Image 1 (cartoon, one colour):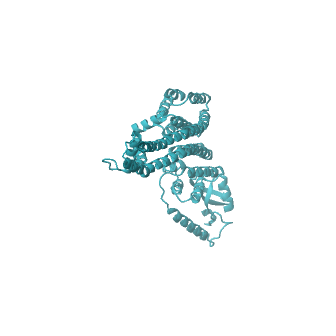
Image 2 (tube, helix red, strand yellow; image 1 turned 90 degrees about the vertical axis):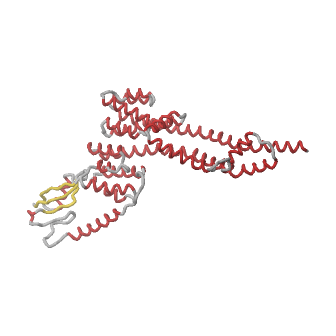
Image 3 (cartoon, one colour; image 1 turned 120 degrees about the vertical axis):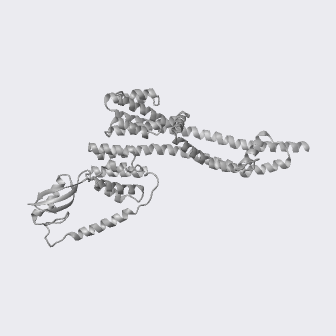
Length: 448
């Protein structure tokens, strides 16, 4: 029986080495795998006369028979792969949520199948399409090969893996249930993405209608109204106040107003952009962010939708973290930083301080008055029964359904409002143009 030296990867993908006694290299490989390791190199020790057997070889190799040619071929292939990997396609922004969700679910499946972590990451890195995620995974694989934990490797790339993602992965590594945690994380991201898509989808229709309506009215002001103005000047009649206002507005749009430097149509087209930039910059300040978030919650209908969406997000986030085994204080901190609304962040900070002092979760949340009583009561029951994560997930599921109802209510309210507003604008334009015409017809009739 000979002694074989081996190099292998453990279940976490970290390199390890050692020796085993076996009759052949195949037996040595089986023993290594039986210990839970994934062998990468197996060689016979000096006790066997210096003979070497490489992973994947059949039987013992003689002193003159060299198995290095396949190794060189593999090395060449690896070098080609590495050269291909080095060609990075630059990407701007964060990793797409759908791509990240798919990667998370695939990694969970590979881990559940018993594949070593490093091998799983290499497989997913190789099959990823060129882009931000592939570039990140290349560096993650390198970090894990160097002995870094998966959560630490992910934490170095905040554009791909946020704090919540890294903390859940860390909890899965500590608890030895990484596959389960990744599955939960994928489900969480899918539901969060579905919620965002519902709201964005609901906003598309009214946004398109408003843009088209503004474009049509601006075109009428620029091209049509000046022709009527010329007709009115030829007849030299006194214009009604509504008509004069319409003509003045048309002159402003066309840039013909007294002392006007910038045409009105330029202001109309550029205003949304400047308002967006101003709000972005204003929101960067603490006061601006607090003011915008507070005012948003006070807007009728829209405020209710934002509130329900935020409650669904923070309860699902907190429930997922607690179920993953993340400490409650750390979980509340992460939830506070990812809830997306200053009012709820302040409430969660009070909750964090209360828990740190040994008090309950529900009391400061009730005092903040940012959520309905049913939410507070369910959280209170969850604390008493030890099923806080279950109660939080139930609240999130319930509020997801309420968000659907709120979105439908918003659409049913916006559609008639758009019809009334647009009808009033068009009716006002028609009325303003026909009032002088009626006066002209009357004057002509009287003269005859």
